[in-house]
Image (cartoon, rainbow, N blue to C red; front, side, top):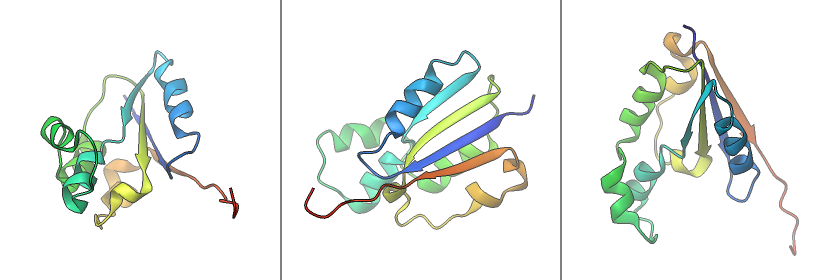
Length: 118
């Protein structure tokens, strides 16, 4: 079975969560919510409530997370990854974009214009 991987890259305060929930309603899809979050918290040492629990409960090596996204097999034909663009820092692997195993992946970016004074 060919698995279509959809990686939605977004900034905070966007419609990415709504899109993730819509994919979660599909019987042919599996959804991952911010799989690079623990990596981001570990690397940046960001002050965030629950940081230690998140790092313990998820893979915090960003390269391993990307390997899992690219190389894993899935039981459903559609896999949706909701990603935050700032979680890539300082992860420089481009395997998620150019692996031959990743030929059935779509990378989509949600960009919003921030208006000054709002």
